[in-house]
Length: 330
Image 1: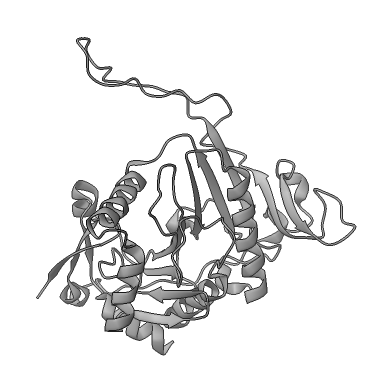
Image 2: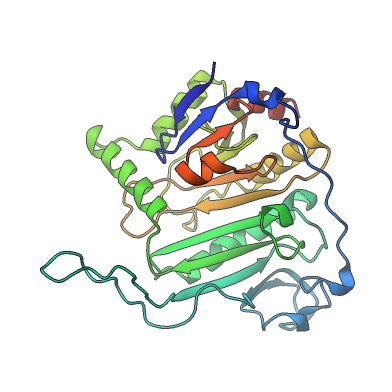
């Protein structure tokens, strides 16, 4: 029987309908990615002149900026979605005048690319664990560099099917001068829960309940817990949360980088290849006093269709409990 589930952190609704995977062409699947051509790869070591000048890098001692010898490298996005400038607030609604219906504001902020490693590979799963630890450390460093912005969003798109225009493993950082509606809703849910429970943390309580039930827990290490979330939007979605709740991912403390690497390797073993996926780090936006960071991993094994696009309600054809079992075995 299909179930309607509500995500406790976001309020997002998902229809869990495992029977639909049995329909013709319904089973989640993927094919291996194409090999990267190093000669045309602007993120490959030795091709540093094909990107804008670097903003930051982890480098071998003695190596010069914009030259070989780096382990993680940060450059401005060549085609930025955000530009420099002073942010301007939207006018307040109300009063006797008509509200502005077609509002236009400058898209100010910063848009960076973080090349996760010099290796010409498609996925973080293809790096060794130490390289992923280095990459995550740089993610945090760049998030701290934009601490004055209202919201900092770090994303990873792997493979063209998930929106990557270049195949070489990289992250993107968006430093925004506004708080997106989805984050504002999460901020308000966490604050309302804290108030209603007289000071309890929403994410910490959810995590404790998941560990108690032990139906969707995939793995645990000394820093973090990996789950198939209760209301997973997509097949084999995973959520990584710190064992000790902390609002900002970029603040000192655990990163879960080793468990993140383990999660991606498990997913690759389930499908005998690294599938297309989107990943993002959710960190506390401006005004979020009661919040907990997390990392979401969303494999793109099925397509978003009319219901998802028209209602923001997902249909997931793999129950999170089944996904967790497969990932534990992997």
